[in-house]
Length: 137
Picture 1 (tube, rainbow, N blue to C red):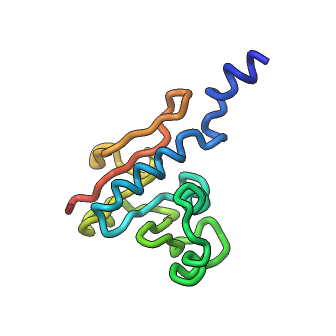
Picture 2 (cartoon, rainbow, N blue to C red):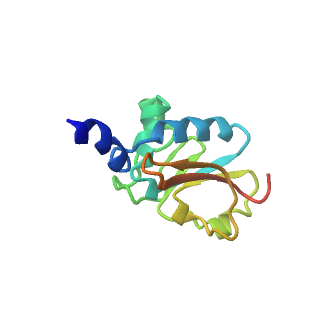
Picture 3 (cartoon, rainbow, N blue to C red):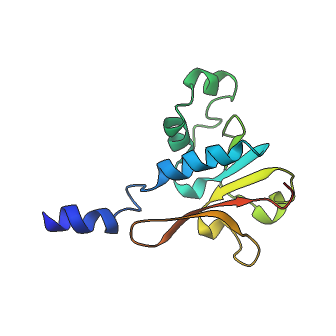
């Protein structure tokens, strides 16, 4: 019981998607100042989590956003309004597009260039996600 209730939540926080609700809610609040938000698919099925935590209207997703383009999680054309889900963020190139916000894993951003607005950690202390603004706001 001790292992299950004390250690497992910390050791397994990554596979239990710990912190996703906070990342999504905060990126949504920050998105109000931006024209588009690029979200890395390296966050592991972020489209599903954004739909759930933002209570996104499924009819709007199907009709206005075009639904899931290919049915796959690696698709680069899926979006919810101004949230675009990408297999590769291509931060170096995309950061030059005005009013762009990025949400991804630490590996999605070159450490010498990207300065996160927000950093998130799993309960284990491992960094889980960053929110980063593009160059031109």
